[in-house]
Length: 171
Image (cartoon, rainbow, N blue to C red):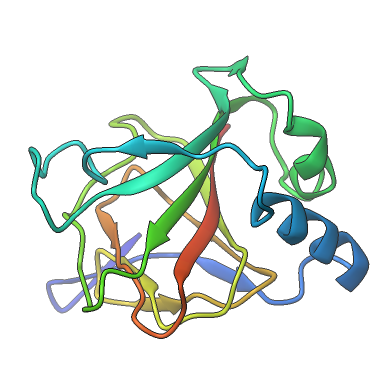
């Protein structure tokens, strides 16, 4: 992160077409398949406190370094693209189209220094907003590498049935 004329400039990197097309399709088809287990979350960031307009579904692959999912092998080709020494958390997010643009609350993933990435599963008009105002569009097979200990937020989409991504926190 840098500061220029009093404005915070976040360092980040976006990589398009991260995975070979067939590998990406396999991951997408599993995660967006009819039998993939999603779990309801009452709010997106933990700070909305039951805001009726902000809910989503998640699937925890890894939480607090413990593997929680028998579906981990589906994403292992993706995990191998993340230069990590230790995984803190991997979760997939399913933001339903709620008929209007919804900006979720600013948040940090953890309040200590670590690395993060968001892998986008489908094309839609939702996006990730970084602390400096940068908007990263949801594009299938794109990954955003950034500092998730800095404020950022997500949005729901309005042009697709849902916005789906995979969130990584790691060292």
